[in-house]
Amino acid sequence: MKELDECKICPHKCKINRNEGKIGRCRAGKDVKIALASIHNYEEPCISGKNGSGTVFFSNCNLNCIYCQNYEISQLGKGKVITIEHLAEIFINQQNKNVNNINLVTPTMYVPQIIEAIKIAREKGLNIPIIYNSNGYENVETIKMLDGYIDVYLPDLKYYSNEISKKYSNVDNYFETAVAAIKEMQRQVGNPVFDENGIIKKGVIIRHLILPNHILNTKNILKYIKENFDENTYISVMAQYFPTYKAKENDKINRKITKKEYKEVEEYLYCLNLKNGYIQELGEHEEEYVPTFDLSE
Image 1 (tube, rainbow, N blue to C red):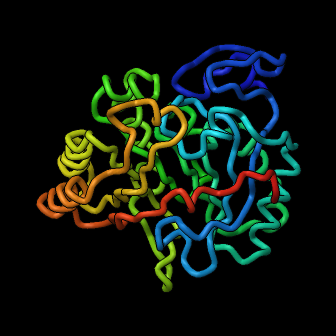
Image 2 (cartoon, one colour):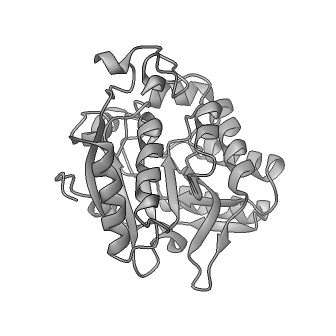
Image 3 (cartoon, rainbow, N blue to C red):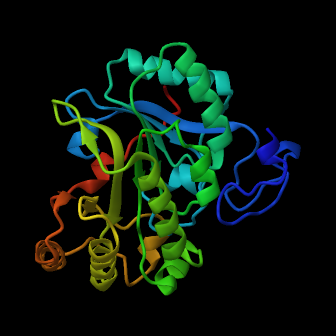
């Protein structure tokens, strides 16, 4: 694929030739690599519903989050190489299991291959919504490539402060980059549209994960969305953080969020009067919801 000759798919723009086996920041090669294809029941209610979401977890990542719950596949690269045709078959197989959608988790590095797989799958009858489940660190040009192929965008908006994004994910200008990408996503598919059962068919939902000791970061994100996005924008505030991977060695984020922190965010959310979205309940056993990446499909 010509896009891989001088890879500029993500904002790092490594410009390496993945077709010749060169490896850039994300560590993805020319072939698609996945760690799991499964039915996921723990996404937002409008995504999982009763039938579940047909997730495909891609290996590797263009961020280096020290707290990644999926670090086995995102940072350590666990997974198996498959062909584009095989990926298309996975999409069809998921649809045959009566899932609500195809959910592409951390797909950024494989956008050109995913587009080809969607084309093949659609010719074979794929007709359920396709979700692009992303860390938010995206090139606008790459998101434009996806116009017409993606029905639902589910981007993170992790950090307001460049200092924090550098510290925890080793990237500069995360906020500005993610906001520009999200605006392009909204241009393409707009705000969420649901079917008669409340399942999302089209639109954008912005996700934000609360980090311990960083409530101001969360407040800044929420305030920005309130002041700069359409009033009907959907946001999903997640409270599922638990320390894993290198976060266990970091004093600031080596714990779950407290009830006090959660309450502060909840009150601020209602204070802003953001109309649409979700706030995840504060749980006790978040670790149990991380999938087992056994390379099954």
